[in-house]
Length: 336
Length: 204
Image 1 (tube, each protein chain N blue to C red):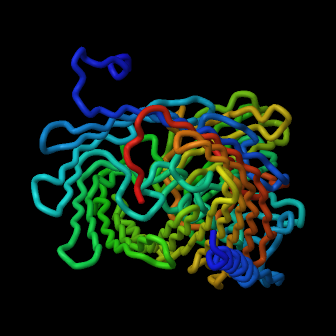
Image 2 (cartoon, rainbow over the protein chains, first blue to last red):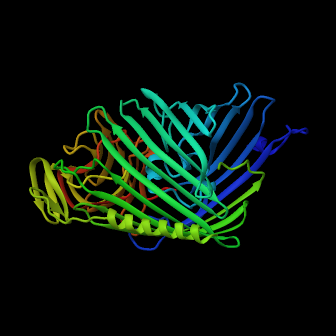
Image 3 (tube, each protein chain N blue to C red):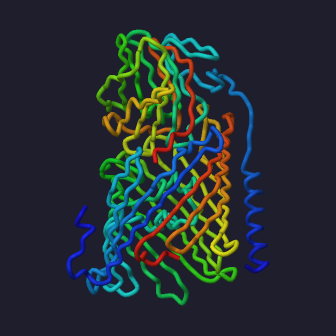
């Protein structure tokens, strides 16, 4: 660990170290909330990014996450990439957040809201899906922006796991097709996504999704829509679908506001009689932010979540959230 | 910001409320052919000598709860009594016949309560649960995080101490994952007074 904090006498030029600290708290507004009623350092990340040589760029980050009250450092991302071997193609290999969707490709401290939407939490975890493998991105030779990305990773685990997992029948593989342009007097990007994996028990998971982001001076509109299909080897196929829509805009000075709407449903849910069960999770989350600079911001908001399931008690969950994020050092350029 | 953009944002918020109103439905109808425990409907899967009342299930047999699980992580609140050499199993993530689930079994031997998990033919090592008097009524909360591999199970005493009794990450006592989205109970010389469910507690 100490080696990470000492540089050789003549440091490699262009190394940009930075530290990002994400502190957050979730507090019950009513008894049905599952909030922890605790404010803590959710994540502390130390990263280095630099050209490795005249061909490759490298990224290394370690992060400490709070788990069971303790903060455990673990490798977050470590990858090598290049755009100089094949024209119009970026190659990346190592451990990284899968290049799929919107939130999964962006570090959590850069999200425009405090916590993961329901659909992201269920399909990608509280932060995102990390794995080791390779990814290829190509800007297609067309008169407009169209980028195709595809990746293959080990797939021994998917999502949060505390062990090494087991070799899957089919590794995790994914693709994303993104286009960008001007919309509503703003710059916008829209993409289609696909991911699949078949685990050792021959259970196949498929994710289909679309993501959209538009930004203009003082505002952002972001949305994702996902459907997950799980095909077990000896049981019925299940399908779940969820989406979120977030809009945020500057109010005055460094103060901004935002609103996220979410919906989630298990499309194929049946009860023990085999009858379809209508079910919905709907949430509305207003928030307010104070952004002193791109290096420090404070955010607070409330989640109003309403969960209904036929013949079950309605669950209304209200949670108050706060977040403080600060960055020290030169953060690499943010994703659009 | 221009009036056009402000109007667009307000329109989005209004659309969000309309969609929220359309998305929420609530139907209240009873399940014919099912029994209830604390207002939760269940079906009897196996009945060797099972007695059902509105406030308890006792004897020997197994039941599956009618309402399916939505979440991958759930918290189960159980209050039960065991006769000597009796047991209560919580089966999480099973099909509607309680197959393909993750079975958590609490067994009594004299005053000692032991715990083991099982998925199919794979069983964990049985471990004694210190701090529990198996001769008295047992009240526990159980988190089953079926979205982790293997499922991560935590068991707390359901009293003012909320003492953590089992953490399968520490004891490697999780046998695997449930494959379905139902849950139920299997009783052997047991009496269950409370069995309800809510979302799993947040670990982070």
